[in-house]
Length: 111
Length: 113
Image (tube, rainbow over all chains, first blue to last red; front, side, top):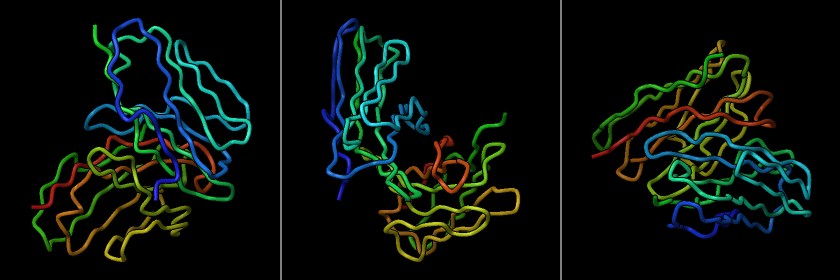
């Protein structure tokens, strides 16, 4: 059973467009991490959100943690071809020691 | 600061064989977690080692085993390989038993024929 549901599964957009990826769960997480993964490589950590309602910005990327710490979103402004990749959200449960991953969102940005 | 390294990069094995994958943790980290990532899916937690002891295990059979050395590097061993074991195996390095951010290595691509 996948505890974290990511949507959409696949997104193909033109350079310059905006997009939002969602990560939802019925479980509460003590923290949530977003990763970006290129084919054949390991995930690279983008950000960690910890507090309910927290918003973090990383250049054109904006990450938000839901007030109840059950969901999160990643918004990309003016997407570029270099943003292409697999975006994964991963949650750490209270007192737990493992990350629970969503299935990922494949983003393709066309020039 | 040295990042997380894994070896080998690629591996091809035959069903029934055994395999050992290796991971060197990031400098200053004492925790290594192993994940299996099948094609088109997110990583699935196998187990974690913290201070040389197993510190949690996912839903994987006993033929998946591991250990951690005093320098905090780690090995993942898989016995009696099955075709479904074909996947990207990732190790993640962190501090404090996984309560903090985890940093991933490049992975080992295992193909079982």
